[in-house]
Amino acid sequence: MKHKIHDVGVAGQIGKYSDAIETASGHRWLHTSGTPGLSKDRQLPKDVTGQAELAWAHIMQMLKNAGMTVEDIVKVTQYLTRTDDIPAYVKVRSQVLGNIRPAFMLLVVPQLIWPEVLVEVEVIAASSTQNND
Image 1 (cartoon, rainbow, N blue to C red):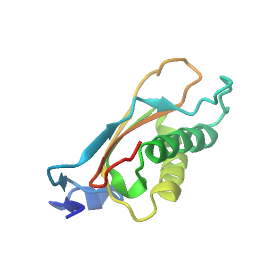
Image 2 (cartoon, one colour):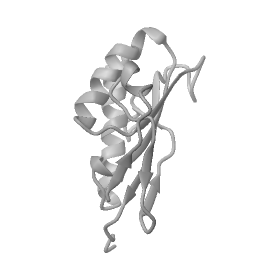
Image 3 (cartoon, rainbow, N blue to C red):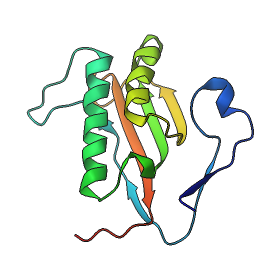
Image 4 (tube, one colour):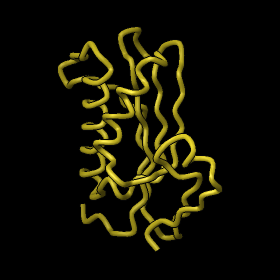
């Protein structure tokens, strides 16, 4: 079993995610910090699309560094500062995740670490394969 989805019919009414995901014992776990769309030289795109693309690129690099892939993501927590940005953010997230359906939580909060930061993403991933690093 990679990950087993346990849907109760709520998540599918809202979006493309799972109500619950079961992971078998013996997996390696990766927990990321809240990751904004901030470049390594402290540049921040002005719009939520650019920030979301960069945040997800960082998440994908973290997974790669851990010897994991997008298929190992079991939980995503997302923070936005503006409700109007949800459609643009979801479009970016959908492009990254494709048919992967982790458990999701999306919150709209008044502010993140800096006022200019519009989105932060954190994930939990679990892999049954060993990392040889």
